Image 1 (tube, one colour):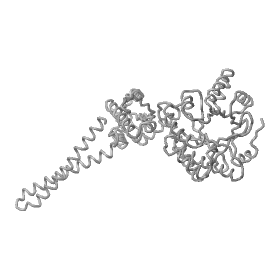
Image 2 (cartoon, rainbow, N blue to C red; image 1 turned 135 degrees about the vertical axis):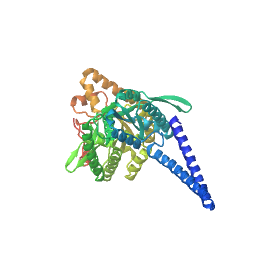
Image 3 (cartoon, helix red, strand yellow; image 1 turned 45 degrees about the vertical axis):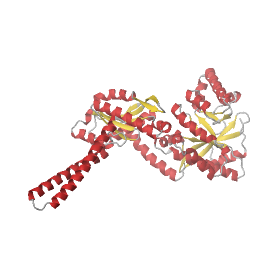
Image 4 (cartoon, one colour; image 1 turned 90 degrees about the horizontal axis):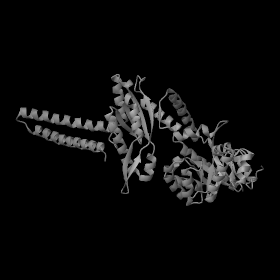
Length: 492
């Protein structure tokens, strides 16, 4: 337990004892005052003492209430309410302009929670809070935990650079199965300089928006600017539209065929989400990132998967032989312990055979995600549902997934393919090496975004299994795809 937590609990226990003592004393004095009938002075003295005991009791109760209102229950450092109160105080003293607000998010807490468990993650948060709190205090700042893995530090402007450097270098030592492990605690930071602020209103929101901007840019920190607020307002409006669209079932799958490079026969398909808003078809790049940022992507993925299962069921009922359809899933699902169960519940509801379903997750070049994804892969392989990795390259994470997981298929995206063709012979040799690496592991390989005859002929010559892209077909509506199932061969 951290020193902060120990001290706060000690203070809490002392106050609780004082309250009990004051209650007992108050009760005894009131009882004594009621029994004393013959000595007026003594009776008044007892009443005064009982009143003092009551005041002491109430003082300690209010102190505990203040502790609950202004301090975080896990880390025992101040919380959001305390920061807001202190910012208002700085404003009343006309000192707000002297400070900056840092909104700090720990990057890896979801990973720690999945690998080490909730208890060990709490220990990490407590240790981090103590380090950050002590540094902020020593530099005349304020530190608070505002929920989850998020912290706020209010610091004098002249300390901002030092604080940023300090945050990026925080590490702790944790004990796992009897072994001490040193862990760096990387974070992402949104910063708001209050030099031009005349009010503390929305200061934390602005720092949050700066943090979001840093995450989108893939950088460790970002300063708030007014255009972020404009973008935030637009995004909030769009989020409400998306929520309504989910209720109205406006998101549907389009199917892009996977074509056997040798036989030119459609051997599978990828389900791609589209938003049909009235007469307008909205492409995924206009809503997928927003849904990712606002916690809506999991619902979308499962809805698309359900529609895929429904379509496959309809095709079977119509006497057609479906092909295996892959559905994209965000890596956010990896931390959901019920993910595979939900998939099984959906496909069982529509009575779809596992062989017609493939789960596609994105390779994020993140070693921490590998540990989480390994469990998912093992659960999926208990059924006959296939597992595909999208965005594969020859980096460490991709090769680790290829070696450690029972993967059925890897998919090479369009940007990788185009980039290699830009470098002519060297790039093409790199493509050949990639195909050989994958096929030597007994895994099928798909190239996405194939648009030219040159690309197709090169990939077919070098034993690529499947081709996906506009060279053969764009994403198709379920009705057009059903027609293609009736005549699955393509001409080149």
